[in-house]
Structure formats: C-alpha cells, structure tokens
Amino acid sequence: MILGAGDMAALRDHRDENSLLQDWQERLEHLDNATFVLDTCSYLHLFRSRGEEGRRLSAAIDSVKDRLWVPHQVLVEFVGNSPTIVGSILQEAEIAAAEVGMLMQRLDVVARRQMRRIAAEDPRGKNALRNVELAVRTLQQVLVSAGHHGSDPEPALTAHAIAVADQVKDIMTGRVGPEPTASKWARWIEDSRKRVRYGHAPSWGDRKKKEPLRHSDCLIWHELLEFALGQPSGRAIAFVTEDLKEGSWVEHRNGRAVGAHPDLVHEMQDKAATPLIVLTPANLTAYAAHSESKRTWEADLGWGEEAPGGSLRPIRSFFAS
Image 1 (cartoon, helix red, strand yellow):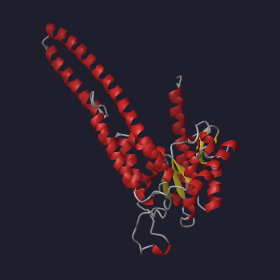
Image 2: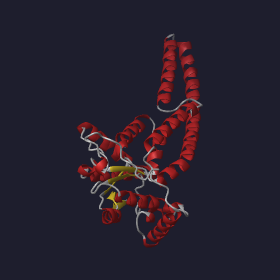
Image 3: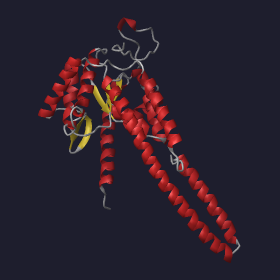
Image 4: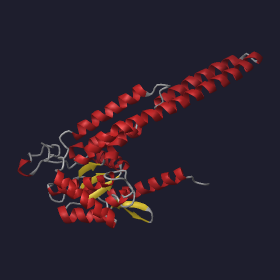
C-alpha cells in the first residue's frame, strides 16, 4: 500500500499524540493538582470540532475550568482569529453542502430513471422505486446529522459558533492575566528575537513567520513564567497545544514529539520551581475521562491564608483587575 502525504501526516500526528499520552500518564500525580493553560489553537479547535469530538473536548475543558488560567496573549489571539476561523468554516461547509446537493440530485435522477424502467417491465419495480426514495431521504437525514445542512448550513453553524464563543467567554472570565506593559512587552520581544537567533524554544519553531507573529509563543511563555512565580510551590503547569512542531513546545526524537521541550522544562524549574507538562487536546480529553472515572480531583482550595476549610473554589487570577 502506498501512503500519500495526508496519510503520512495522519500517522505522524497519531504517533505524536501517543508519545505525549504516555508522557502525561507518567505524571498523573502532578496533573491532578496542576494549573491548566490552553493555547489559542486549542480554543479555536472548539469551533472546528463538531459532533462527538467537539462535545468531548468541550466537556474536558469544562472539567478543568476551576484550575484554568488564560495568558493575555491567548485572549488577544483568540479575539483576533476567531472571526476568520468561523468564516472559513462557513465557506467550507457551503462548498461541501453544494457538492452533497449535486450528488443527491444526480442519485435521485439516476435512481428514478432506472426504477421507472424496471417498473414498466415488472410491477415489483414500484416497490423498488419507493425503497430507493426512502433510502435517499434516509441518506439526507444522515448527512444533516453529520453536519451537512442542505444548501444553507449557515444557521446551524452560526448557532454552533455562538455557543462556542459563549463557552470560551465563560471559561476566560476572571482568569485572564494582565496586558503586559510596553516596556515588559519590548523585553519579551527582544528575548524572543534572541531565541530565534540561537535556535531556542519556543520561538525557534515560528522562525519562518513574519514579525511580530513569530514572537507570539514567547510572549505566552513569559506570561507563564510570571504566573508560575505566584503559584503555590510545586504546582505544575499543564500547557495544552496542537503546536507539535520542532523548536516550539515539545521535544522531538527521531522525528516525533515526545513531551515538553526540555529547555522549557528546565527554564520553568529554574525560574519558578514549577513542573511543566505539555498536552494535546486529545490528551486533555483522555485525561478528563480518566479523572472522571476515578473522581479524585485535587482542585484549588484557595491561596495561602485565604484558603477556606475544604470548599473548592476556582483558581484565582490574581492579575485580574
């Protein structure tokens, strides 16, 4: 069997996720007490995911919401990119729906022609024709349930987009870090340029992007470092991303992603004494299912003297105004 480029990419992605899956399974003790941070693409993935996959990812994010924090850069990127993502999804759906409609019309015409020919020669052809018409209607219902809504998919997809936007708004409320000052932003950008120059994560992975987009991950990274300094000692940060390219958030061995980039792990440990774990959205979904099955959340109980006596409370965004 000859595999095409798309097949190879799918195999590579699956293999990468398996490696990362093993990585988080070895760190369950840290994850059960970790702060979760999703990158922009993980939130945007909710727009692209519909059906069962979307429901599982949505439920997984909701299950860790009380332990979730949002870098300001992620908010900025989400607000800037979500209209483009929604627009492209609608365009793709319209094209797909038009193609489905044409195929359905062609099937209907051919089926009717053939069944009428049979019916003229054999009375049983009438029953066959009715069966074909029933099959066509059933196929239409299946297509609708799979996300194809005839020639006008926009209403259903618009409702989906609004629901996702509402969910993300609910998730982010009270959990977004502060906008960095101009001087801090300039320092972080300069650090990112050095990382690009010397091949260091996470900026090296985006070295081919234009300015200032190539520095977005490094801005998120510096926010994570600053946030980690204010966390309780030893609490891990679980960073959820689909960005598995070399030189970004994950380490590559023999051409595959095998867990958090060691340079970032060491930097986080040295500067904030905080463990760093990198997950994919699929890992997060699997972890949420695992945690639900054993029901042993060790969620945030507050900060220092503020901690109440046993009642769970959301993670405090102590940067929020």
